[in-house]
Image 1 (cartoon, helix red, strand yellow):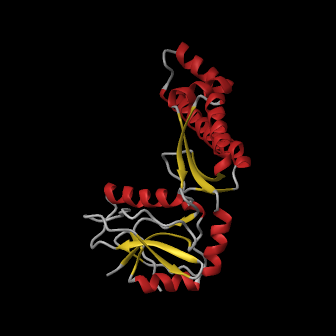
Image 2: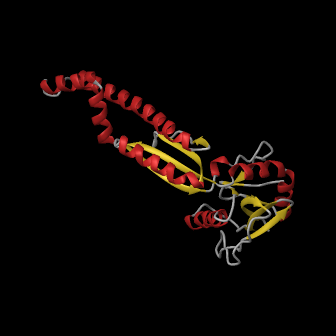
Image 3: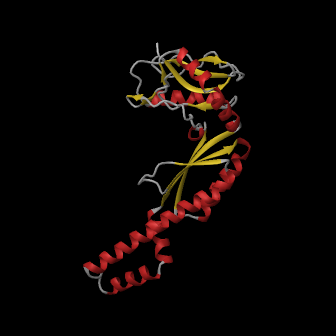
Length: 256
């Protein structure tokens, strides 16, 4: 039977609760595979696993429980190996890399910060900062709305100003929080967010980091900041140059 991998930790990590269950229906019992100074937290892999909410939460819960007792390198949902021997073989082959990552990430968690604009608030800010936009808006108002060309010009000016403000605010969010993090990972660009950044933060610095987020909210009311964390450090695991590519049905596979 295939082996589902939740994460990698030190072989000295405290024992798992006997009743810990993972993905699958019924949930598969979670167990530990040890190889040298490393251990993999695994279960049997269910057939036809898909990223349903129940299994995504089960994956996350295993990582959260294990991570509460010590550092774990989280694997993405759906990481599957052909069997237990393949997993221990990978631990042996990449022992130096995984041990370095465990040392680097020990005592640290991830916070993901996403930022969007409050549309009404950012338009008000753009108007207050741009005398040309204010002047054209007033001219159009006095002209009963203005001509089609004038309306088009105003719209283009507002769009350009908002885009410029998005770029500026994205940089400001990152610059304000980066000094409080040990590392950052910028997420993929999306039309839904003007900023999507993950921060690696020491557990003992988490309160200071969250206070800084609140200060940004107070200073920039035109921004909507969403914080997800503390999380296992997904964005900072770095599987290493030897990590093989390979996936099926939207799942990552660990292969020998």
